[in-house]
Image (cartoon, rainbow, N blue to C red):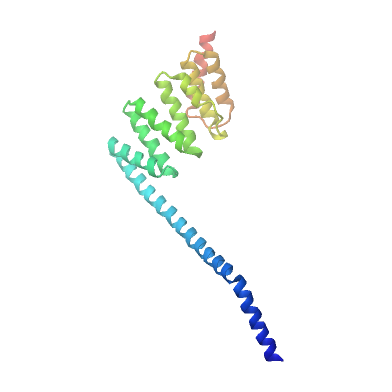
Length: 209
């Protein structure tokens, strides 16, 4: 009887395997493939980050050496191939700073617009502020106000309000400029130059009297 029971269990097992074996094997294979694929994806991401970091280091060396063309090439490569990394934004900001320092505001505006479009987080906010300042210098106050129209995180609220005031002043709207400067001072957030902001407010107040 024991032997018959064992034979019956064996037959039942064979039947069960015949009905379910393929799906089990397929599931195991898919599971292994998913693990291997995920590890491969992580490895690829790590490789991308390391390459982007290396390119950024080269870009910083080019910045220190004043090699504008090399910096532009490296920043362009990062923007094209590694736009999702913070290194692309940082290199773009560095290039724009060099361009502004050389007085090439048109090129700086193009670079900063690219960073604004590709970056996220703090880098995007910094790029917006710098782009607005460049546009004000280029006599494009209305364009600067458009860049500043969307809300900024609290940490950037004071800086954004001050630049917005600069844009209004450049556009000839003293009242709006004064309101923006007062907003910047009341924000409690960091300012680029608190004493300079007070000077702007005093000058506007004196001019209105």
